[in-house]
Length: 202
Image 1 (tube, rainbow, N blue to C red):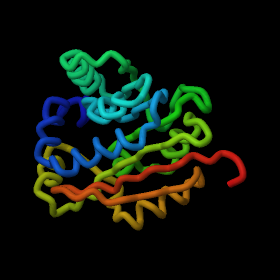
Image 2: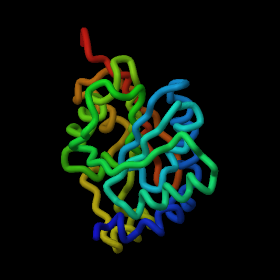
Image 3: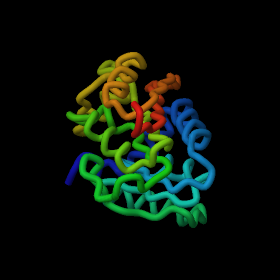
Image 4: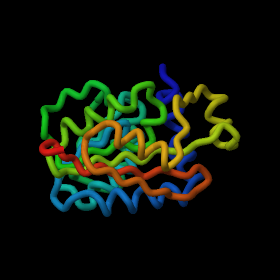
């Protein structure tokens, strides 16, 4: 059982402790998702960003490697009566989806947890259409933060601690398109990254 399987019940509680950042992320996702797009959300946790995307998307595939997380997301969507979200298990580093499948792909608060974040970014861009958007907000967590310390005691591990500048540099280095990174303040601030995918004439 992974850390995320064990802490699925705690995930929404942790979100509630960082409300300003989460509100900013939800607002940002809804704003960036193209109207009527087919959307993919990877490492979706309990589905909050999927729900934000579903406001404008035609359909959203909410995915995670943790089945307990997906079950919580499924129940949340059922309770809210959301009909345009489906669910599936996905590994963000090895997506089974074909090239150019989605108008927008999302991966929230996961890239700082990966040894090879660039590989994940390129996979997301591969399955996203030319001119589409890849939305990748990620926490700028510091070891000194009390919430991070609590998670660490439960088995949480991060591989990277980004600033907006270092995050933008990493995303640009993936060579997938035009990158914009903004900071969302909060108890744990967020680097809100958006890539406009450009597959030709880069």
